[in-house]
Image 1 (tube, rainbow, N blue to C red):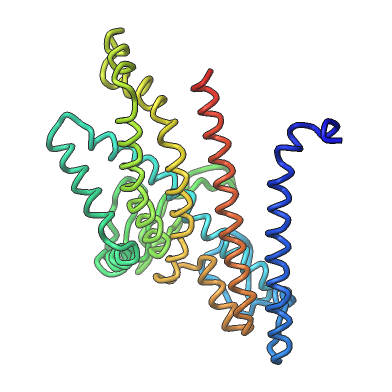
Image 2 (image 1 turned 90 degrees about the horizontal axis):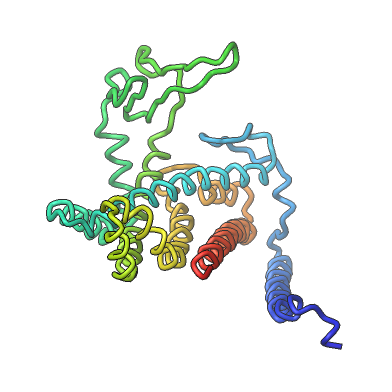
Length: 326
């Protein structure tokens, strides 16, 4: 009988069975919780997600208004969370790689500056950094009429960051932001709340990624580096073509944990008023009174994002390992 079952199915059957048991346990606990709430006269169920939301959302990637359903408001909040987390992952990876390499530099000043940045940032609580950056952006920057010109067409003020945008409504051309009266018109704007979340997550994640990159580089055997130098490679070429590719096998697994932490840490955006998933959930909870259901929706959303991230990173890690073995 067992011989007729494919090998791959025999390998995954125990895992599928455990997953099924876990799903049944969660469903049983949820059913009991809902029944207990109904028995006490507390409204329960997820039907409230079909009701009109009754509140506006300041930032949205989708067309949304207060008359639309609550489930759409949750989708807007989820997309806003991803809008902050995904660019932060990219920026944190780039900055963390630079800091990690810089901490191994032969130049004393560069090495110490990178070390000072890493030790300072990672020893200050993330929430305090978020509040400090938001306070700086919303209070210490000038008003829109005196906006700082960072680059041609790029303005920074306490009302946000304004950048050029490609307008294809009547022939594609760049629409530049311009100071008009007491505000800025045209272009593409990023709110100070979004900027605070993006910058905080990027910098905080980068210092931990820097240590992961440093550890991965130090794990590369010296013999590989000596061989590359013997071939006449310059230090930059050794780092690009030998050190970093070999270090990836040590970097990717712990890097996944930092990406997961960054996605979950994006929930702190509620502290500065950015309309992320947690913020939308709090408003929906106050509107509907369905605390248990709102918390379940948020937990399920973050769990799904974390599992998806873990799966993608495991696939990438397997690909790196296979290439290394080949």
